[in-house]
Length: 262
Image (cartoon, rainbow, N blue to C red; front, side, top):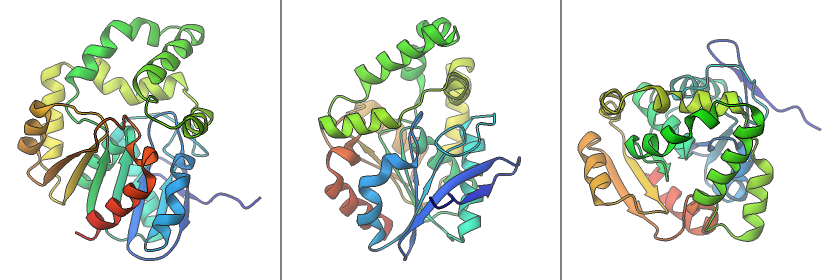
């Protein structure tokens, strides 16, 4: 088996990735508990016109399990991969946690644009969901894992075809320290602190930004997003749930090609 290439993060962590195809670079960033393999159905079609770089976030897949696991660190890790492969001004495609990572990346590093798949940037609703669950999330493994499984089963997988749901579930490895590290900002910040930091970050994104959702976050969220990030546009694929890119992969590949051309 060929050795998976890695890039060295600023703190020395090894970040695994793979590259396919040739053309304008696209970087794929997966969601929490998953890995670059979650993009498998999309890599070959995208690689027909693009150089596709799929990243394993730290604590996921074949990357080092080394804290911290916050999105700023993960964005720096992704940039280390981009530099390692020479993917100048990439277009970032991020799902869930990867959408947040892609957003922070575009605020901090040169990028051609961002496609954020079903990751709301306004976090007060997510905080309200997590707060009553926090004692269990911070409990032992025996309490943490069933709760995470229940959250994902009830909120995330619903619209996926049966075979694709089984594939994603097989790729998912919910490690408690990684999940808590990724969610620490939400768990430990006040709503006011979150709003201030999210706004200040979003205002640094000056490239085209598409928020593509499979579940409707509501008109209030859309207005908020367009207020905090003037380059953002919103697009809803109704009733496709948290994985619209895997429910309708061919449609998604066409959309990535369209928006990445600018």
